[in-house]
Length: 235
Image (cartoon, rainbow, N blue to C red; front, side, top):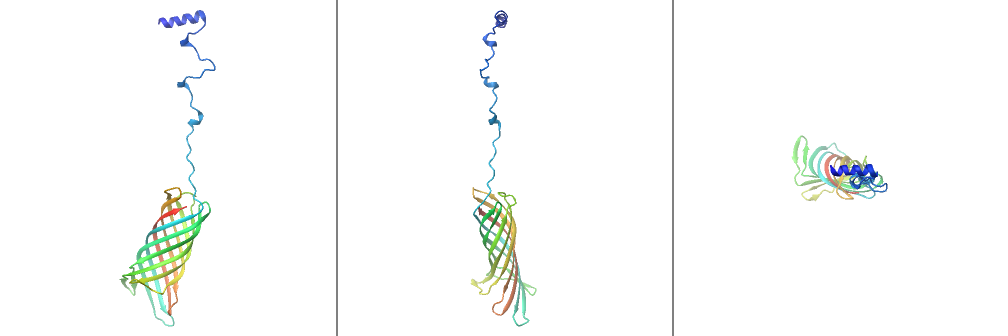
């Protein structure tokens, strides 16, 4: 109380406030407790935009497949014919190489193969397993992949190519083969695992319409190959 009254007396008689009551001079900085933060420090840091893949494209894929084929074989010049239905499981692989003419659009060429191992064969109402038998369909395709949102995971794919179907029994490959057009379509998603590599999954199907006119036979082979694959993409 004594110090407080002393301060009042000084103000009344001298008009000068003691040090405890002094106001900071106009050029004096405000105390730290009342300082305002710099405007730039209050702005949130913006994340960099996601990288949009461009340029060279490489995709490797591998996964399980199911195959269903109808094989009609007739002997030229006779009425003799037979119809086979072939079903089984196996594997599919693919190697795709291409480029990116526009953001989100990839075009190129691919080597794609489907293999069925020991398929089931149905003939005239009877079914049997073709043991020690491998059926292959290999094609060279032109493909297009479209990403609706460039840099995003979701994409659509379509392809058209020329393929050859062959059979191998007990380790010996049959000389006869069926050739024709192979169509493919599917959709998938892939996600970055490094700057340029992406890993994903792809589901699709291939349809082949093949024929063989060798050795006096007229063969018509129709094949469906749905598959699910794991993909690794450099882009």
